[in-house]
Length: 413
Image 1: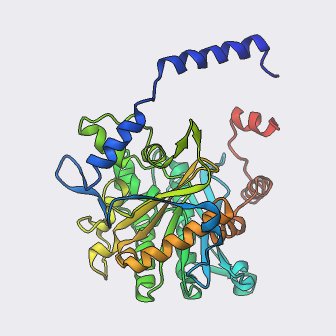
Image 2: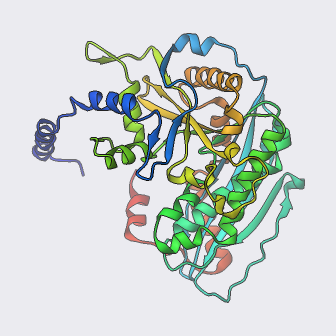
Image 3: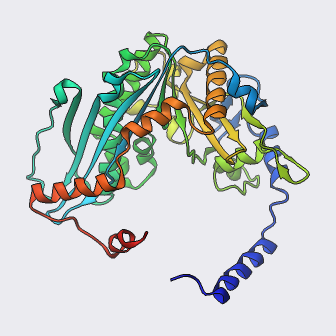
């Protein structure tokens, strides 16, 4: 049923009333104040530097067409992504999610594209359930699969199985195929498993779980991945398509300065968006310098962080998260690029990464080609997800625990 016109107009009037009462005219000036006064460096209440410019703090722009026509400084690139069927609860008490990870190559490598790492993470309400967890090969050795039994939790089961499946599949696949990468690997997402690291700032049960052996082993995979790529002198970055950090805005707000943005992305969009005569300019990509991040989920692998007790073979500062952000006005979206300090400490490498990523964003009108290709390889379609859930139902002689939302959403076009 569609909205009756009278009700549509009623909602529109609500919107107009809210628009009259909410004035963001001063937000640009507030953003400029944050940029000028708080980011060199940004210090938290304990006097700790949580965001520090890696080089000169500045905002730059490049013509979209010029960027798209620039040649890449890398002869080849690889992308990595992991997709899941989404966490599913069954009537027999099991909660599970399945992830598949894939690596792409540009130029294409069909053998590499065929390879998969599959992880099914299972949470069992019955403590007596014990599942085999060793890796098993299939598809003539191109694929690997395993079961991971999630640590016991009383709540958050769906979020736990999702994060463990996603990040274990991704990190294991990256380590398995690291030697295939000659020039640059781009992870589809952050450099480190932020969902797992964020558990330390959540409910007490999740804080305890963050230090469990299994989540810790997954974080260690990413530490070893950084070490592998540093040893090979090959850049490794994470391309975050939907950044949601609130580190800067939260810290600025705590210092008593107005921070009226929902997150750091909204702040950077305000800083990087350019307008003429009230209209957004769409002919240039705008971007910042690189920063070092040591707050929020990034504090665990900061130089003074505990890294969850994981041994670090390099100097602790080598693992610190550095980032810069790129604003694409054509789609009005902001991207965040993360890399370990061991990679970006070299100004020449920073410049090469910027040139490649800006050229790819301009040409692809979105994420780099290697990321897009990896996403396509790892994605599990909606119909495939339904079919796989039915397969689990038959194999376990049970049914999915459904709610009315499942009925409603399945019926919607």
